[in-house]
Image (cartoon, rainbow, N blue to C red; front, side):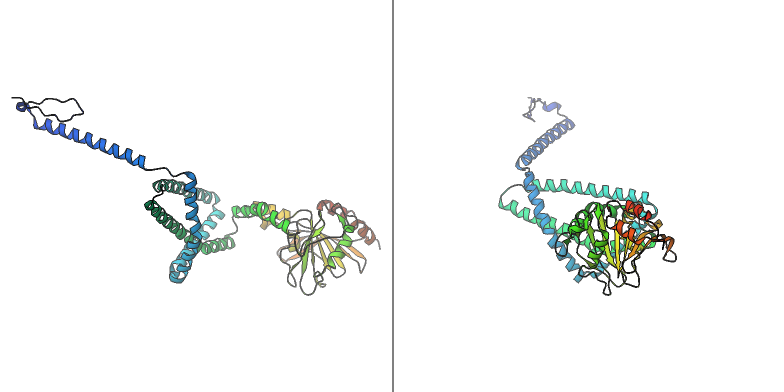
Length: 418
């Protein structure tokens, strides 16, 4: 009698005779059929799982990310406060690590800039990769949280809490390490010099971001005012009358401390006043704005001679008042900013190009010289007495738009023959 066994209904059945059954063949057939059943089961499970998982809309993902980020600042502050109170040792360790990184990184950029750039590029690439990976992971996890049932809502709340806490800890670590990082970098610039990339970056930020804001703000609001129309405008300025007007402005009379302001020669507006010490003045408003005249006072004992710091702080033209004496000079701030971008400021030696005129004594003097860094004084190559009447006549009708042309005019003034 023949015995028939139907092993797989989904395939063509093969009759097996009892007398001829081989144990190895039967086991192989059973294993193959079991594997087929398991594979089909897995595929059906994956299909059902994919069908049950919805993709979260992009707008919802943005909202979820926004909710996470909005919680980070508060949690970061709380984490910093906790660390300062309970983990001072860890905070000091982070500051120390930051200082080491700042010192080493700045020294590397100073002495081996190419190596520093490569290291910075690799670090940026690593951070970019981590950021992209993090976004991809966030997107996948957000898809898993898609839905509006109570269980999914609880999962989302837990997800937001965990992610925001993780980001807050990372932010707190950066903030705690920042003082050391900045301090280490600053110490390195004092020890080894400023890396070129730092100078260029600072110049670009100042030029593109800082200056447009402060140049506009300097001539708006309380303390600013329009100058009388009788003083002229840019291409025809009565500099003598302007010197008198600015000297008589409230707060500009020297009373033991220097004071000053800036004139926008194109708009003929004067900025609010700034005050300094007996021998110095802090930065004036709009220091890098073109077509301006910086004005400040000097004590009588010093006179209206500009110092190297006055020239470095002036972009266009400068005017100093000291009693009855006034000093008109050319600034070099623009040149210094260009040198700063190329890392050559240490090589710069300011030049003195000035015209002094004294209404009380009726004298005018042209000064030309260079600054001696070692002995810290001007080395004059010219000190010429000028015809006072011709000098005043020229200053009452002065084209201030180009400072170099102003100096050309001063060099052509006739000498005093008395």
